[in-house]
Length: 459
Image (tube, rainbow, N blue to C red; front, side):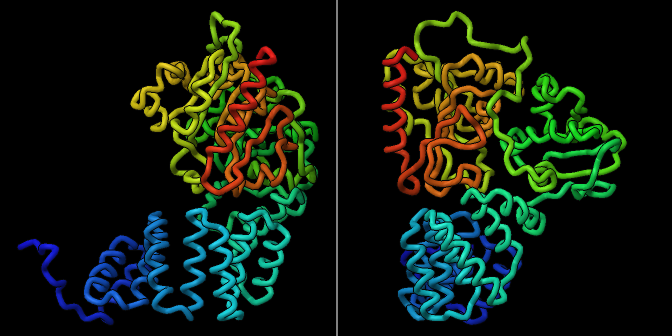
């Protein structure tokens, strides 16, 4: 078998047959194989617009967003009246944060064909990212009225309500999460709690999403215990010791998922269903509801300097991680400041960058003393301030009522709402928002100015 040199003409292919094969692979979820076939087609015929368009869609599904945009731009240039291609281009542009261009592309798709509900829905997604929440909800409603009614539309409309601060309506529609592919219902035996009287009953509540979600919504458990019920809470193992040490959960049985057997229970409910089921859309955190064990590690030999913790990246598997996480080098303007001791609470692969890039001389790495969230809570409790991206430590600091500055992407998660520097969820949290998608430089400069002012005031 001989390799083809770059000067060798591509093998002749039956374009239509190859295209059908690529579409079949794409529909079967084999995006990489589909892309390979599209590449062969385009080597033979670079003017074949459908291959550029489909290849762009496949690349986007593989997370190769910039390449997907480029392919779709080529396809649209060859076939400018293709409304579907323009809508797909809008989706790809949204994925790389080029939101104004994404909006214009979707508007161009609708101009060419106003009868397709998915085009209107896609426009609504971009408007939501741009902060036009009323416009987004209007487009979601219009798409639904046109007969486009996937669960994703109802889910995205719920997020728009929550972003707008309409928590009661948002949490009512939040139930549609169970019908989208990303949600993973627990599928437990026994009847679901529907909000009826639970006095004298044993209610099992289970964590359903990430660590941050669990920390944010565990505050609802005392409400249930106050209704005369016995509460069992199943959560992720790294949170168990912290919850068990917090007095507010006295009387609540905390069990570890996949470790502890479940006790008998009468009813069960998912944690993020509690705002709707209790009829209490918001439980403020004006006082700490989490308390770390007294024997956990803390800063020793404190100096007069300001002690600041840093977390710059979330889990890479998070669907929005490419927008919410920073590189450690992005925070270099903060590390220049004298009078500050920095401590890294960063875990996972991003933590390795501190040593690899030479920043370890400026930041003390706390990974060796962090075994679970009880350790992280104790360390945060001994800091003057935590600066963190939108990750679980932000929620942890908020639940501890410790000062925390949280970095928020341009298109924020629903819980941070829009246009505000505070949050109703945590009384000690200040939000530092991007003013442009994927640009952290001005955010970091605002952080630096705020930190300089804090240092001048004595910490």
